[in-house]
Every structure is written in C-alpha cells, then in structure tokens.
Image (cartoon, rainbow, N blue to C red; front, side):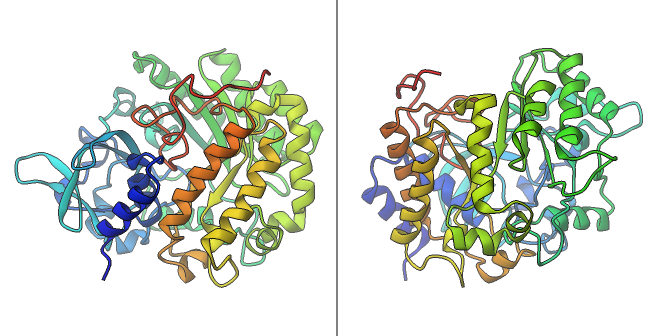
Length: 442
C-alpha cells in the first residue's frame, strides 16, 4: 500500500519545477495535521498565538470532536524549515485533523518537528504571541476576537459579519461552513461577535498600531457573509464600506485596505473605492458553469454566473485590473458526485477560468479546499481532492501568469519559496521571488 510519504516523493519527482515546500504545504492544507497535546497552545494566556477561527473552521472535525484541541487551541499557523527535503521557511495555516498522517510533536530533544508516517520531515516554528494580543479593549473583549492577524502577522482579518444571508441547503455554498462555524462557537460558549461594532474595530486596530512596533501588519481585509437584504439597515457595499471609511479616516495610509464581497454592480463597487478600499476580491468560487450552479445555489439565484463574471470585469475599470483579485476554492472541482472524475478534466476547466481573467489583466488567487465535515461537499468528500490536482494547479497557475506577463498580486506579501507568508494556499510559494516575472504596465 502506498504511504503518504510515497505519494509526496513521487509528486516531487514528477514535478521538480514545483517547490517541495509547496507540495508538502498543499498536502497539509487539503488533509490537515494532528497535534500532540504538548504542541497545543495555552490559548490567550501563553506565548504562542492561538488559532482564532477568523471566518471558517478550517478543521476536519467539529469542535466537540477535537478533544484537547478544542480546549487548548492549536497555533494559528506553523512555519516549517529543514528536514530531509531541505525546506525553506514555509508558513502553513493550521487545519486540524486528528487522523492525519502528519503530526506535530516533540522529537524527544525538546524541539517540535512535523512527522509524516512517523518520520520527522521538518522543524516546526510556532507564531509568537504578539504584544497587541495581550491587551484588551475597554469592554474586556480581546483583540484576537475583534481583529485577529494571520499570515504571520501580515494581515488583519476583519470578519465584521460572522454569518451569511445565503442560508440553508438551497442557498448556502456547498463547501462553506461560515454559518456552522458561528453556531459551534456560540454553542461552546466562546466569544464570537456576529456584527462587530465599528468603535470596537477601531479600538482593536489602535492597539495593533500602538504595539506592532515592527510594522509587521501591512494590510487589512474586510469580509464576512454575503448580504442579500440588509444588515444594520445597510446593503452590502455600504455595510462593509463604512468600516473602511472609519479605518481610513483614523489611520490614513497605515494599511492596504481590501474587501472580500460579492460581485456587485459597478456603482456599488465605486462606493467601495470611495470609502478607501484599494483591493477588491469578488470571489468566483469555481469556474465550471454546471458546478457553479450546483455548488453556489444562492449566488446563482441572486446574481448568476455570467453576471458575476461581467461584474468582476467591470470592477477593473474602477480598481484597475491588478487590484481585482477574485478567489476560487481549489479542489471542489473534483468533489463527488458532481465534480470532474479526472485531474486532467479539472485542470482543463480551472485553467480556462485562469486564462479568462488573466488575459484581461485580472489575477485570481485561490484557497486550498478544506473539506469541513458539516458541509455537504465535506461530508461526501472527506479526503478532499487528489494531491496531484493541487500540484498541477500550481503548474498551470504560474504558466498562465507568465504567458500573460503578470506578476504576483498586491496585498499578499512577498512571493517565492522561503519568502511567502500567504498561508491558505501555496500559490505565492510557487511563484518566483520579486523580479522573477515581468508585469504588464498598469
């Protein structure tokens, strides 16, 4: 029987132009990792930054099924170095799976290592508790609850609306657990604010600004569930935009402002820009028409795939193509029973979508699909997509970018293996370091 070590080494051999760091990172992101109790954090009372559950669970088990990891959180991210593959510094978002063949544990000498099939393959670094996490808002709320940071401190992630108005089986995206994640944290008695008040967001960012003396935080993302009616009496553009307006008025130019929202009409997109947002993420989720209709029923019903794509292209007139960066969920293309049966078919489809956008100067990015167990696609596809799909996606992504003379998108930190901090996929790790690609003039 093929071991997981056999699989990754086979793919490293077949795709030598893909960094080995990316092969291991994609496997960890699609399948998760386990933690010995000794590798868990002391939550907000320790020296390690704990996992904040900033929007989705990104776990392969529900909180009640995680055992000790539900009480003593795992770290937000880990960084891998060294080992038999000579890994350069690689930042990986933590997705917990107690049954994973990857395990983080003490190697017997007091050092943490990542073990695969019971063999150590990399040293593990843990994110230090940032000074700003040690300070609370005047009302007692933690900075981690209101304005957590990810990507090794680069990005402040502001999930200001913790639920989605695409609700129920006929509207929710079939791979998304935002609503369940809200429910499980509330059921566990954890603080998990549904709609974050603007004054709390500003107070948390004031604390970050004061104590982030090294200037590690460089960008913020405003996001949350889709708004199909109103929240606080406001439609989506004005609901999310009011936070950007307040942040930019209080901290002009301190951070790059980004928003993840639906593909909205051009007038709404203009309001985002007027509020101070500089990067727009109108996520298209999955390229194939049939799969979009099946997997994103609410988005198909309220907007429709063709209109969604038209709005993405229109938004480039306002933000500039380089600053429109739609995400897709890499791997759901192969989810049974409706997805593509072969890697070739899935890559052909996704590659078509990449060419559609990149040929117009728009550079998508992707999140590696984590099959969360409370979602329809997670329940029927607990193993996710084949690792070969993810490795070949990195190959076609870079090739399409190079063919269209595009460079790595802004707002994601540095590209290149050993440099990248983007933690929920390896697309930045697999691109050349700065200067390796020639950008199309703005």
